[in-house]
Length: 223
Image 1 (tube, rainbow, N blue to C red):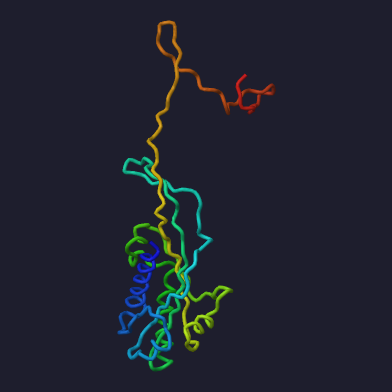
Image 2: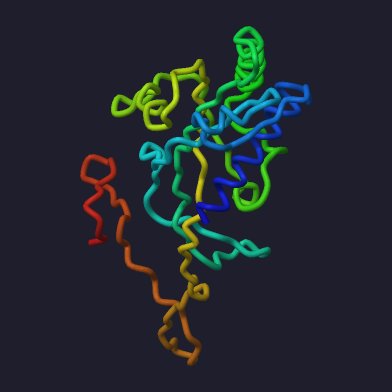
């Protein structure tokens, strides 16, 4: 479920910021919308991680089906590949002084720059079960159809320094199809003089026959 995936990505980002970027510096990590009302209630230093956009990562969409195997290596089911969704986060720092906010943003930025994907040891639940890489990008320009100023306008707040983090999270479509039992090879035979069955030679489709010049002719049938 997409709802579970978002929660699991949130949890991984929280640990990445708290334990690896800030080293538990006593700064709260919150995921609320940074509106004027929210900012007015803030007393302690905080890093706000606001999920402002969700859209499918079309570049990572795959067609066809993926085979699933049992312990004996037999195909048991076929499933549609996961669909990737880009979760865009606006990360801001909130303290009493701009200098402290900039220092916090620097620490968060360095914490993310050390990873091209969410660390696998921070993953849990459905995204961990998939065993796939969760790519992330940091501080790239926003899409042409949306600017950060538009985001702040929608929130009713003033423009503030921020870091844009985009996570491409795979979502299991849960669409699976049972595979049929393996098909045994059947071979016909003809009776010999003593009554035993002899195998019928297979057609010489795709066989090569000598040409008049000694090379190989590939017309596909034996003559």
